[in-house]
Image (cartoon, rainbow, N blue to C red; front, side):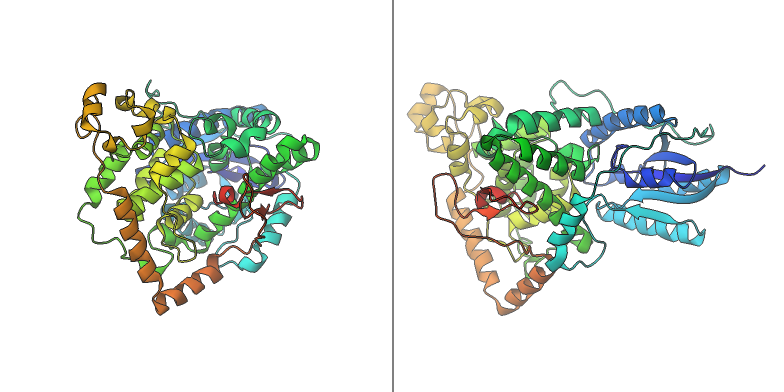
Length: 520
């Protein structure tokens, strides 16, 4: 009996049916079998976590519903990709594999190389499409911005009119593991395209006016940020449709929303800018961009002890601890707080970023490898082309949580501490500790380090290293490969902005604060 001829659309981090080039193009070539593969080895990697799978599982439920509506349900399979493809090949004649290019971790990079070799041996074409303006291998940064503009200005692809039903054979291993119920202590975002679209609409029409004002505020940011990051990470929304929706809204929005929309569009462009770094140099998952810093933090006997205290929110520094406890429960932090906790771990605690990156990836529901590793290296000072970002957690607390409300929410043992000591409880006199029945070193830990002295020592060490002529030459090489070519303009200082920068991908004269653009 002749095998049915099929085109396999392999869904990965693109869990949608709209603006999905592989699906749209494959339908025009023949009968499509849409496939999602749960890869057990992928989920054993140090950067994978249950909260990622929960979000993906939500997306898969809705993706299956939408594909079923078109005529063909999603075939959800369990196993290694090549093994799954071999089983499918036994039952079908595979005319082609269709998927988006994936900027994942080193494991997925190696997996894709093996899959490509297997397909070439069998003369099965693999048709890959971009869902970001990202180029495989070495990229010429001088032209990246114009290429990004061209990509994002292309029309979003519609959903196919229909799919031809294909009966999957019962012998296929299609029992995906169901995620256990969420603990009552967790407040993780739910996945699914419909929720993503609701968030997008609510943000663009209601919340964007407060976006720039509240983006760094750990209490207000969850309500006034877009919260679209996990939907972009796992592809229930495409970055192109989000940018185009924001640009359309900008043409209609009142004046008080314009700066927020400009800043948001900038961040969407810079997301791809950072993902390009990992695509250009996948080894930055394991090695420092600036080779001179490779062993910068190698000799720290307290690394593991400090790492565990940091992850548990037990460093003795309230703003850091509140953020880490919040992240553990919610899976999300505003960017300024993400930058601060990484900076604190890297500088004041002097922990190598390679120890920080995997557990943080597990905690972020919106873990995007291309952004994650580039940002962590930037915040830890190992890129060679960025200024040292040594945040003072006390200053950040006073600036963004002046009354200590966020701290007291996540560090309830400090509820009774008065405002004047909430950011530095270790300075509270003993008689006050007795009065409020909060004893530092007992009810709440004393700081692991002297935060001012440790920051100074860290800055001195990195500054000394950067002065080396060979280190300077390495830094120039890093910039040529990875540095942004975005032009910056200096404007008069004001209360609302310092050193404003034009928004990439937007010709509007609106500008946004450079310190806010430090998001990317």
